[in-house]
Image (tube, rainbow, N blue to C red; front, side, top):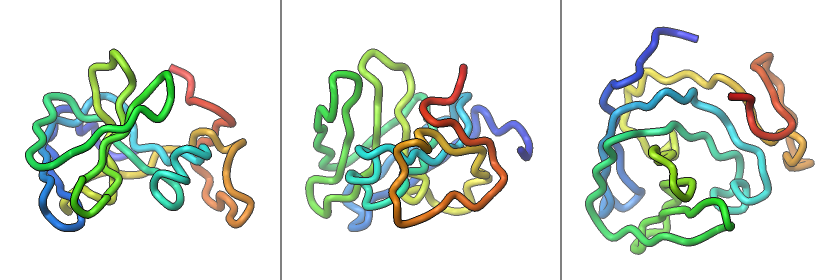
Length: 134
């Protein structure tokens, strides 16, 4: 899918602009997550990209959403912005919060077995019932 953009600089912000962030694109592809937690967190499908060397400015609050991960959001406007695995080296950032142009292209769908019943996955991208294989 497109060129390898690993290491490219990406930046973005929340809806109200109080939280800004910048980081380097990690090695993960942009994937849409259809799990119940992500849908409840974002209001629909969560598309995110892993960033390294993430620098965040502004009022971020973190919520331990499971034993495995926590999610970050703007404490002023509530924008869902970040997901990070406990002990992980990258933080996933909501693709919708990134400033354009991103140079990103959706590469697949994860947790498709948990998707909502109100939509269908209608593209030909790789789709996994749970996590994508390493």
